[in-house]
Amino acid sequence: MAAYGLYSHIQSNRRRSIALLIGLFFLIYVLVYAGALVAEALSVDADPDTLMQLAWNDLLHAAPWATIGTALWVVIAYYFHQDMIDALTGGRDVQRAEEPRLYNILENLCISRGITMPKLKIMESDALNAFATGMSPKQYSITVTTGLLNRLNDAEIESVLGHELTHIRNGDVRMMVIAVIIAGVVSFFAELVFRLWFYNGFSFRGGRSDGRRGGGAAVAILIAVALIAVAYFLSFVIRLALSRSREFLADAGSVELTKNPDAMIAALRKIEGRGELPGATSAVMEMCVDNPRQGFGELFDTHPSVDSRVAALVKFAGGHDPGPLALPPPPPQETDADEDRSEPQPPPRGPWGPAADESSEPEGASPDSSSETSPGPWGPHSGATSQSGHN
Image 1 (cartoon, rainbow, N blue to C red):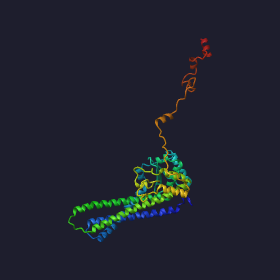
Image 2: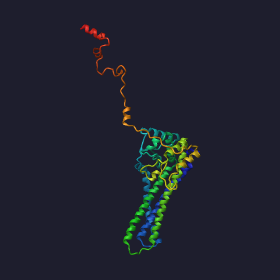
Image 3: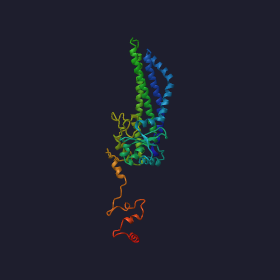
């Protein structure tokens, strides 16, 4: 098995990325056609076939503008998606001086396998999670929460970083960003069409009361609504399918990097149910190690359950499942009292008086002044007696 053992998956992801981009433009054309159909139905009194032909002509005229707008959206997302994610999560870049423990673990992993080291980011959150982002080697980054950094040991953190590095290597990150772009564009156009429909629909119902409109408009509007629903559903299904399949492969890639399946299992057990990122959108949560947002069993979950992922690691990597794990207590926070104790204390006084360094002569004092003012235990020093005899 080659490095990561997943080169066929990498090639498949590249093909899927191209197919997703082509599918994005196709879905946009479908939405533009649906919007044109709604507009014609609300403005022209005709049978459904005529309305659909008019909408098709509108699509041909609008297609260049829709293509330019979609391409511009993709370009903006390519260059600025990381800034958008950082704005949502509060992630910030860190270097070795700020987080030497985390930085060294990631650097050692990258050096051991000849991988270009991605940027490292920290998110201030008690949640236990991490995610990778980026569309190119210059953009790739891994974001880790402070909660995960404080609650996992070095081996477990190494496994999580190996999981995210595998996502980067396999092309999962790039493909997920494209899928998120598709969902964003489809949602935007769908909302635009619905707003147009409701605005013009209410205006039409208020302005036309003569009953001249036949059933063609209603049929055309129903077709348009069905097209919008299908486009939105397809974008949603694509995101689910991509997320669920890639997590098993990333877990396996992490074990191949670290040679430590038990650490990957322990990390998953600690993260389980504790990864909710406050304020993060569903698109960001889909990129994380674990997504605790669930519903309808596993039908609409973007990640397979932790139990199924652990079972796969036990079966294929030879790991041991400890079951659900309690978190270790967080590291104690440094207080003012701790800072006071850390300050240097004066040396203790000896049993017969001050310590040697305390009894040293003050700066600037004459070396003979102490002998003149301090007689010995049996009387004045001999030098002092002779001087007085001279006098």
